[in-house]
Image (cartoon, rainbow, N blue to C red; front, top):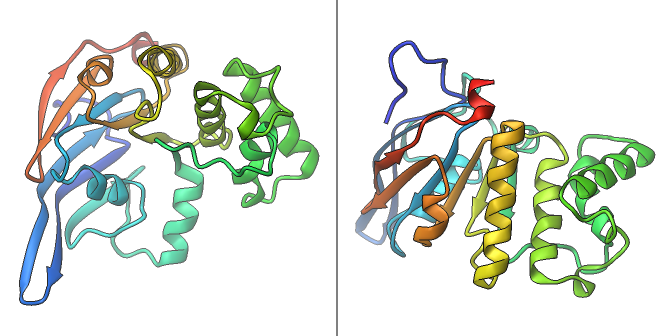
Length: 243
């Protein structure tokens, strides 16, 4: 699934990516020659059944794991030869993560949770608080900045998690089942938020999901079966892409 002729270079590109795990004398191939190009402003869903390789793919895209073979380019940089510390630095700058179970620190307030990624960028305390408050306000959480996770609803906790993922202005948001722990109504609110950020601000995001309704809200809908990707649908470019 490469870009069209004449299109701008992909921000994220996987070329014949394979991943195998060896258990005793047997090697199980989980990813089987994955090809994927993601451009700035893309809102992509990757959907598939349990065990199809979605989590393995997410870990590789998120620079948390390395492919057995193949190439991964992020902003034109080949990641294959990078050291663990180089990958960690690139991950901190370029990728924001959102998880199904939120992963908020229970003893920290909402704004303190959002500010955590900025600690690793040596941002001053005043700057961290200002940027965290601005991001929470943008996501409709301006009146909950001093609340701890236990004092927030599931939807509010996910908004805090999204704010944390975006506060460092990453190139791409990687969301693993972002509505999986929420009821249908709240999950719908979270998806409408992500779609709005994509259309209004050009947010680039890959959403891993098993939910058809979530997948259909993304401009690009990709299905994964037995470690192989196939593009199901691609809508016209959003306003964010066309400017």
